[in-house]
Amino acid sequence: MEGILAPCSGRSAGEMIAAQTASGPQPGMAATGWRLRPETNDLLTLDFLRFAASLGIVYYHLNEFFFAPERRQAIIAAQGFGMFVDLFFIISGYVLAHVYIGRLRTAGDYGKFLWRRVARLYPLHLVVLGINIAIWWGLLQRAGSENAPSFDPLCILHTALLVQEYLDCGSPYSFNGVTWSISIEMGLYVLFPLFMLLALRGARWIGAFSAVTLAVAVLLLRDHDGWGHLPPILRGLTGFSFGIFLFRIRGRLPDLRDRGVVSLVLLLALFPLLLLPAPDWLRMATILALATSAVASDLHRNLNPVVLRLAPLGQLTYAIYIWHRAVILVLMNAIADKMLGGAPLALAAMAVMSVATIFALSYLGYFLIETPARRVLTRITRRRDTKRNKEFST
Image (cartoon, rainbow, N blue to C red; front, side, top):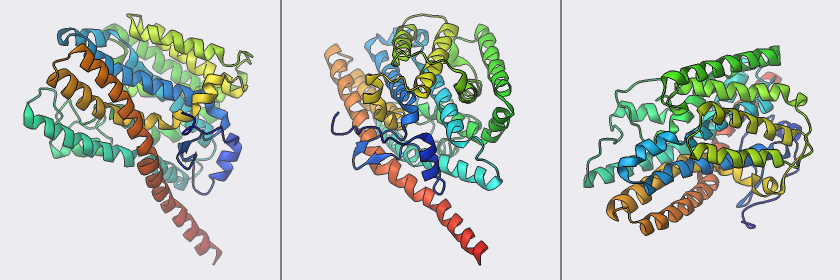
């Protein structure tokens, strides 16, 4: 790992924002050569948690193949690793508030914000979507599947635009189904100015909103088969608003002087809670406590050596999330489970190969797709700003 991880850049959030005034915040752009580097020293524990959450999601979709087919659905339903997505929502709300609060003053600022979100998410998403379509086409030439995504152009268009959670195309299955959460994120970005209005009015406003959505979610658990079956937009609103609330109250969080141990203990405690049967309210409470402790650790510089070492890998979180289903579909589902009959040795070997392939594709995709595409797309807004400034000066 020594060759691909770089030390922290030493930039504070203020320096990061100042440097990005012209080009806008570009999460994940902080890299030197082919080495990963945290974008700022202010969010190292959150970067580490993003990476840990992405690994949890990968495990969630890998481990089902180690159970008999007739038991998989029940076992996966009992597990809660899908709730790492809720941690993503929380971190997303916090980071965007950290960078943008007080900076979206005009419609133009809002437009730039949305465009930069598009530049951040769409390039890699579209590439992997195309690969998923090709994979499914090839697999369906060999055998049918009742869970196959729809090749209806409208369904593909909805997924390509990341609006599949808001518009119905008539099929419950879409290519690279994990992008449901990215679709929810896009809706949250559209609503972001409203979140900022609540946050700027005071912590109690955004806190009350988050508390209400959380209460509704807990109440709805009585009529749903677990947190993962709650309305996706409700999960997004709950996590995203809580992240913004954390940003507003960050100055009130105590200095535990624990070198980040509390965050690590909570993370380690979360894994068995998600693996074994446990109440979803307890799982969510642990996630909220974990996010809160991570913010406190970053704020008071109580950083664990493990966090310092692994925080740069947080830059690969989005790529890992986007790539992993396609890799698992081919190596675990098609080859290990179907072609090789689910032999334990084959499953173990393919699981190791899957993790290695996911990491390699994420690393290469970050440098060869995400970063170059984002730079090209963000230059568009810079050129427009430069042109307007010249016209104004003349």
